[in-house]
Image 1 (cartoon, rainbow, N blue to C red):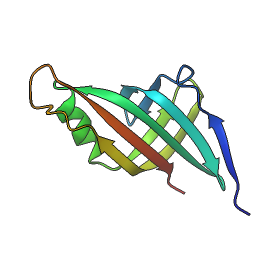
Image 2: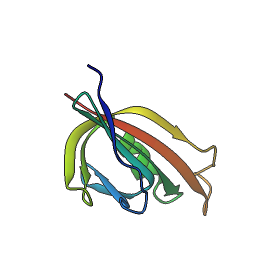
Image 3: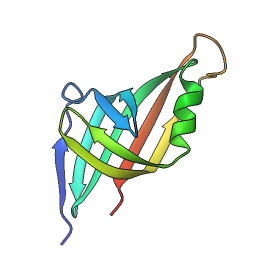
Length: 105
């Protein structure tokens, strides 16, 4: 049986996701549970100053994920990731990142 449940879709409810010990201010957050496996998706802004730390974190690929506003935590891995074409090496620039994580079972 294939079960999919949309649990949250209001980006005003969830504003922060923690990947390992790094808090990320998020927008457009959604969480689903499909066959007992949690999946989350969101987008977030990355500044020139944050770029190196965020991309170094994302290269790890798998994280301890915490959603404080929901009291949810799981081990998750990236299954979809994209960025805007903004040149974040340039001072003052801000890029848009999109990230989807799936629970490691």
